[in-house]
Length: 152
Image (tube, rainbow, N blue to C red; front, side, top):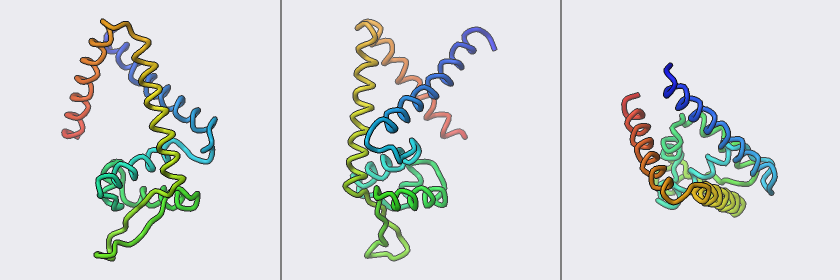
């Protein structure tokens, strides 16, 4: 790897790991100590799909890019913890719909505020002229990763 590649690689690996640590730390400090970051992301996906009226287990698994079996394991745990509910669809008994409980909604709202604050702090860290450059770079990075997902 040349110098640019090393710097970018370190940035991506370290940033990803740091973001997960910060998220996990925020969960552990707050009211929802019994949740892992992975479980938090499942709740987040359920809320997103619920808002779109697409809260079937298969749609949620697609959103998370995981198998239905992997989702079932997480949902079992989150249902026991009181964050999610699972019900058969009234029109098609083969379909399982997943819903957030009041606790699930609360934890997701908390997590959304955490992200909102993190983004605000990050943007405030950068001077105005560098913010524009950052935003352009982030948009391009997102395009790159989305194009890679289609290839893989």
